[in-house]
Structure formats: C-alpha cells, structure tokens
Length: 590
Image (cartoon, rainbow, N blue to C red):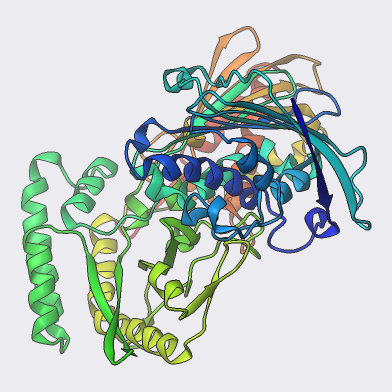
C-alpha cells in the first residue's frame, strides 16, 4: 500500500548563507531526532543502548553520500510524514524538547543533497520506506515534489562493525545521495577531527549518559574509518591532578617526591594569597579545596529578581580551567574556545566551544573570552562555566534561535543581574587565578632553550625550498585515527617517481630532551614517523599571529613528507635531522 504526499521544497532550505548552513548544524538535527525517538518511548532510561552512526561516503565518483543510522524506535507513517515537514510545530509529534526548536529533517536533508531514502522500523514491526528525488536543486524557485510512503522491509544494520552489538531489529536508516560535496568537502581532511569535537561538545551530556555516537568517513579509495565520540568538555583545575601531570611531563620533579611537592605547593599557594585582601568566606572555601585537593569549580545560585513575587535564582557552575601546558589532548589547541559559559537546552549544548571552522560563526561560548585583569597584569583565559536555560524559556525570560545556536534575553534586568554576578565573581577570584597561574608557571616551566640560528635556517630552508615541487597533490591524506593522533598518507616523490605510504603518529611533550622527529622505514617505501608536535624546535617554522591548529599540523605533516621523500635520495633526511639536532639548542637562564 502506498500513501502519496506533497512536499514543498523552499529556497530558504537551499541557501548557502546564514548560520543554519553549517555541516554540524545539519548533522546535529539528525542526532536530535534519534535521541528524541528513544526518549519519546523510553525516557532517559538505558541510553547506553542507543547507538547513532553517521557516515560520509566520498568514494563514489560524483555521488557523495551521507547515511544516518540509529537503533531507536523508528517512525510510523504519520510520524514519518511529519518529520518531513519544515520545522513542524505540532506538539503531538515532538517526542522530546530536543525537537522544540530546529530547522527540521527536511531542511537538513535537502541542504545536504537532492536524493533521500528513509527506511524505518518501529518496535511494533511496522516498516515504512520513503524515496524522494529532486532532479535539480534550485536556490531561486520553490518547488513541490510528490512522494509516497511505502510498506517495505527495513533491515536496519550499522556500517561500523563495532556497532553490531547494538543491533535491535528496529530503528531508522537515512541515506542522502547526490550530495552537495562542496558543503562537506572540508570534513575529508584535518577538520574532520574538529567536526567530531564540535558534535561531542554539543551532545556531551548525552554521551556521558551513555549514548553511543560514531562518525566515519569512507575515502575515495573505499577505505572507511570511524571515531566513537567521547564527552568533550572542559576540565576544572585540581592541584593534585596538575602535579601528577607535571611529574609525567617534566624531569624536574621526580615521582618519589610528588607528595612532598604537592604539600609544598599547597603551603606556598595559600601563603601567597595572604598578600590579597580576600574576604573570609573565599579564604575558607579555597583552603578547603586546596587542602582536600578538590576541583576548583563552584556551584552558585544567581539571584535574578522577583518572579510573581517570589525570588528567582538561576543555578550555574563556574570554575577555573586546567592548566593547558600539562594536558595531552585536543583541548590544548582549543584552549580559548572553552572559556566562557556553555549554555544547555534540553541537555544539548546550544552555545559551546570549540568554535566553528572559520572562527567567525557557529557554536561559540556565551560571554566568551572571560579574560580578567588584576593589578594591570593580564591573566590567562581560564574562567569557564555552564548553565541550563530550560526554565528560563518556560518562564519566557529568554528565547532560543530556531537553528539552536544561541539565545537572547527577553528580561533585560535579569540579564544585567547575571552579567553583574559574573563580573563580580571574576574580580573576587582574580587574585586566586593570578596566583595559581604564576605559581604553576614557576613549577612546571621547562628549562628555557632557543634554537640556534644555523638550525633555524636549516629547518626553514628545507621546508621553503621544497615547496616548489612537493605540493598538495603529492601527498594525499587517507585516514585519521584515534582522535587525531594517527594520520595516514599516500605520497609520490616528484623527483624520483617513488610512491609509498606514510603513517604519522603524534606525541606531545614540550621538553627539549624529548625526540622531536623519528623516521623509520617499515617496508619498501613505507614510512612511520613519530612527530612530537609540541617540541620547541618547530616554533621557527610555525610562529606567527595567524597560525591555527590546522595550519600548524599541516605544516608539520608537509615537512614530514619532505623528509620522507629526501630519505629516498641517499638518506638525505638523516643528514638534515642530524644537522638540526647536533648543537642546535642553546640553554638560557641556567
């Protein structure tokens, strides 16, 4: 039995401009739908059994595809038809508050491509199928497309083999083909990791509750690689955790002296605070946190004013970020993106870091860049927090954007009270943050070294002189693995014609005693490179005000490629590495 329906495709759905037109915004819409389907029938119970899989398939020529698969509770005919309505506002089809706002699945689909197939199977074994094909996307004219809902067997299987354990003989599979390649092309390269981090941050509370989200890429060669997302949230400082990190990363503190160092730091830190005129409540609080090695994070209730003659308080969490120097993670490269407040609606972050790809639009923190000054001295960006706005929405104190990327205060007095509280807190705790940052720098700063001018010249000349013939076409990235710590490339040496494979493994240590580059030949023309991306030797190569993490990594990978190619020619890279490494560093302030 077939059921015919008309679908209106509007020009607004296809436009290039605006915050709505971002890959992570569209993919988030599908994830919202999957989580809503689960919550609608199961509440927040057993979320660890819910699996959502997104795959970007680039390997079919001229037919870029996206698939979204879940093992939730599927859609009956009525729900399926209404899911294709633009931002449907009928409450009976809103399975959870996650669907209260948003662009809708129809916009997310046809912004991404012009051919849609949906297979869905409910808990009651009702199976439905929809096929919609727009022959040509038209950004200037609306069009009406007729489609049919068919009763058709729906076998909902995951692509990623590690997701097989989540098979439940129900769920939904969405396949978008003849996709808009240009809008998702940036995900093929290093921005794929950034994209995964944005999604991880937006859904971090659901991930912490057990939801399994995996994102994969099938490259032009047909090889697939998946990442299972982990909760990607900022971490608050803890003195003992920080000292442990210092011990791991430095040869200045011996493991056996760790406890002694922790106790000494506590005493010195609290003594240093005596130089400031802090009130007794703050002093008592910070002493408790330092003494018992608690996280430097606080739960507060902000008084916003009267609500129907009752005092209204907004609960928030606010804290001091971990010291980025000692953290071995993606967090280090996105440090500033975590400052400010993460805003949650229905447990999904609508304002959060890391920021969008071009840093000009997207998922930015609320009151981002909480930099504070005390005594004329700038302090690192280390203040962060979070709060939920569900109750504020319910009371009509704020409104949320349809694209779920921000909100606006309707009650300006409440907004003023909120901002005043944050500024007052910032000033009260500035001495603590200032002292902490200064002392941590003294404890963990490695010996100061500079690269000799001869080594700088060798490194730069090796890189710059090779740009003429080692171009992007000579080195093709194939796979990114393990959260961005392993990268795989196919390379072709333009001078020798030799082709091979390169595996680059990232390690992170900013101590000069660590190796900065290790090249080994695993088999004929196949290399493994261990690259210490934090080593100070790279600073002359990548320093500059406009250097981003993407360009930083790209430069180091290009240099790794050059050295591998030079190794094909009389072990040339070994000579260069030796020239740079031997007597390259001059120790300062010893």
